[in-house]
Each structure stands twice: as C-alpha cells, then as structure tokens.
Image 1 (cartoon, rainbow, N blue to C red):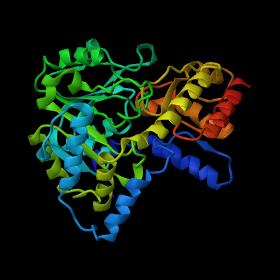
Image 2: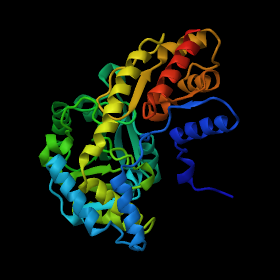
Image 3: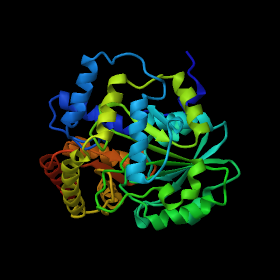
Length: 398
C-alpha cells in the first residue's frame, strides 16, 4: 500500500506523543509526572456546563450552519469589540472544531503549491505540518532565548521572498510564553506594509492567559491598517478550560472566511451543536471565572522559573503569557553527554533521560523548532510541579 507524498511529509504531534508515552509508563505502574500536556488542569466553569446540559435537554442536538450558529457568531463579534476593539460582522467570522482546524482551514483556503509561510521558532508544533499538508513551504525564523523568543523586523524582512504568502504571529506564544509589545508589533507591521500581498495570521489563543497583567495587544491593535489582510485566530479552549469541547473561531476578510468555510463544509461540517451553546455562554457570561485559574498560573510561573534557574546547565526567562516554561537546557545536555549519561547531545535524548530516570515527562524544544530546549507545562498542581522540578534537579545534578 502506497501512502500519499503529502502524509509522508508530516509527523505526529510530539506533545501528544510525549503524553501518550507518559500514560503508557503510568499504566505499567511507574510514578510519572506529566508536564507535556497543553491544557488547564481546571474544570470548565459550571455556568458553561449548565448551558450545554440545557441545550441537550431542549434537543439542540442537530446540525447547525457550517460556519457556526448565529448566536455564537454574535457572541464572538461582541467579544472582539469588547476585548480587542475590532469590528466584524457575521460573514467575517467562522467557528471551527478547535483552533487547529481554524489554521488548517486557513492554510487550505489560501496556500498553493510552493507558497511560503514565515513561521517564527519556537512555534506551535502544528504550524509547519499544516503548511506542508496545504502544499506550502514553511520558512522558519529562529528566535532563541537571547532575543526573548521574538523575531526582529530585520529577521522578518530577510525571510520574505516573492513566494511568501503568509506570516504567522503567535502571542502569547506556545511554547515560549513570549508576548510581543505594541512597539514590537508596530515594527513588524512596518515591514509587512512593504508587502501588501502577504496575509497575516495572528494566533491569539492564549490572549487571556496573561501573566504580566498588561493589556493584550495583537498586530491589528498596533497596525489597524493591516485589517484587510489579517486573520485573527482564537478559541475558548485555554481561557475557559474547554479543551475537549473543541471550539475555535476566527475573523478576517470575508473572501478568506468564505473560502475557509467551504473547506470546512467538506471536512467536519459544523462544530458540535452543544459545544457551540457552551462557547456562547462562555463568551457572554461573567468573565471573572478566568481569574482563579489565572492567579494559580501566575504563582506557578514564578515558582517554576525560579526553580529551573537553580538547576545546573538550565536557564529559563520569565514568560509574558500562556502556561509554559521554555527552558534552555543546552548546558545540561552537554554536561550529561560529556559524562556519558546520554548517548546523543540532543534535547530528545535529554527528555527521554528525564522520563526514564526522573519520571518526568517534558517536551523537547526541537519539537517546536529549537534544539536544546525543553517545554514544561505548569498547567498542573503546585504539588506536581514541586516534585517534578525537584526530580529533574536531582537527576541532572547527581
């Protein structure tokens, strides 16, 4: 049996692979602490669950419009206006089965064979593979810890060619937690203005996981003149702890959104009816439900960064958002390899060593496009974090 060239070019999600391996070891009786998963450890707020239960009771269990219910689209439009100062009408909004499908739809709707997509690294693991599925070519721009995991205008300009179709911005970032300031986005916008044919995709999924307390700003807030070619991607998964409900949404130029809806109509069709009701309740309801989760993430973040920096050969800078620590482990990797404790001086060998010897599952930085790093999710209890980082410290330092 011969598989398609397209599917051979992509790889399974490394984060899911780490989570699966940790689960397998747990099932075998090993004491494993998993810091790989990118989902909040909080339950979905009760009023959101109640809305879904009521939807089931009243029989709202049939197909909906492919692009989302009118009520949810209205809630999304009001959210964009309330939180971001952005105006969109219903035909500019598409609801999908998670943020991943939003980007997938965008890629298939806009990218032709050979088109290039500029993606800063470290990047969310799915960006490059989705571009490959669409027949495009990911152009990776490295931005390591030395520059705060953010690309510069000079790097962006240098990556753009006549084949560039799209530039991706993810702030707050998964995996680094880096957040671009208004001034930094304005500087990137000054480059993008020179290239009016390029689509801008701003992935704002972690908008509300704000660790600094500063006002969220995306590329359109900094550069409103880019409105006509910018797609804003977001969802309810992270802010409302609704990962399993699978609701993402986006807004942008009507022509692109219509094309994305056509793609979706031939894949999943509409998102789950019940989940859409829940998402509408989340966006329209009392937003204070986010605060307890955010308070916990901020405390965990301070603890994790402090303790990681105490480990020999590990360096971690504070994140601005999201719930990850993206630590530079190059010194520790070199040391362990020099002592013969890992066979290869790679972050994959390093993370496998931590899983086997320390019983801690983290994701290698190479999965996100930067070799020599590791991503730890602090979307777990403080007790787990204390034990996990203590184990890592003991294992590396022994």
